[in-house]
Amino acid sequence: MCNLNQGCDERMELALNSHQQLKAKMPAAGAWLHFEIRRWLHRRHPNKGRMWIKKKYFRPHQTIRWSFFAVKKRSDGTKEYRDLIKAGWTHIVRHVKIQTDTNPYDPAWKEYFLNRKNKKLYSNKDGRFVEESGWQNDE
Image (cartoon, rainbow, N blue to C red; front, side, top):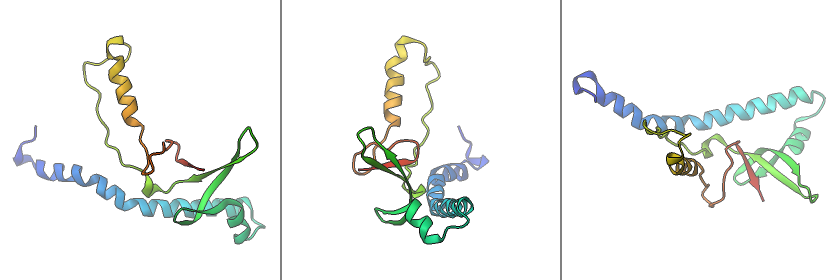
């Protein structure tokens, strides 16, 4: 435990506010990623204009006018649009440490590890499952 003479209060305050500081930096990270994607696309298509690149690689999605997307064709011939989600939409989830006496190879702890795995899966506000890859299905 911390001794109050060692500045434990400052460390606890930093730990409590670190997710807030990270959340504040998310828009800057999203803007940087958008800039880098556009830069890469201009390098990939040097003879094409900005509007051609916008029509081919970006589309309006939810509240975003320029959402980078990919089209995936399903086996039945329909198209599935997969949009790159914004960094600010990512949930900040605290890491929960594993109990020290557990063993993933011991069958007695199987239920514990299944519960841990199920808790890692999360849903967005609509209740739909969001993949951990950073792409969001738009149906």
